[in-house]
Amino acid sequence: MRHGIVFLFLLSQLTASAQRQTATGRLKISPDGRCLVHGGGEPFFWLGDTAWELFHRLDGPQIRYYLDNRAAKGFTVIQAVVLAEMDGLKTPNRYGQTPFRDLDPSRPNEGYFQLVDSTIGWAKERGLYVGLLPTWGDKVTQLWGRGL
Image (tube, rainbow, N blue to C red; front, top):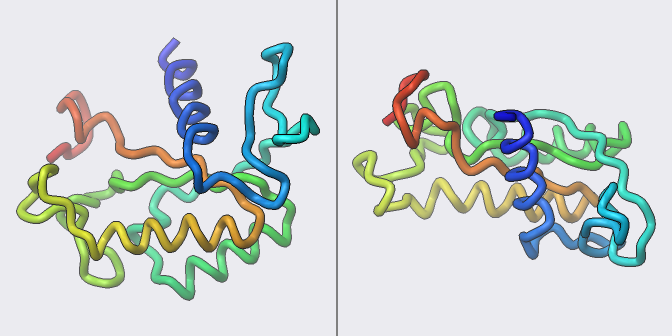
């Protein structure tokens, strides 16, 4: 059940965002409700690579290299999380940025999110979709992990 909820959330994020338009159009659910299709109705094959720490561990040139590599290998989706699991709230990314000022979610750090936005644009340029997970559960409720 828990995995189903996570999948539906990821699917909703994938289909809802305007950045997910490529040369073949937005993804949507097929009329029979059994698969994803491009805007024109042709089936979409989800071949995803998981790069959870993408925004947190790599810089721009490394991210572009990674995306080039995955596009060349035929991947269609890159799955990444905005708030990294491995101390992503306190340990800065490659540019010295953390997601929030003073760990306060109401004070996002624009510098951190610029890399997220750029990465989504670079993926789109390569015909890749981003399955974007906003955060891990420990950032919402402390049942496991480091939380806030």
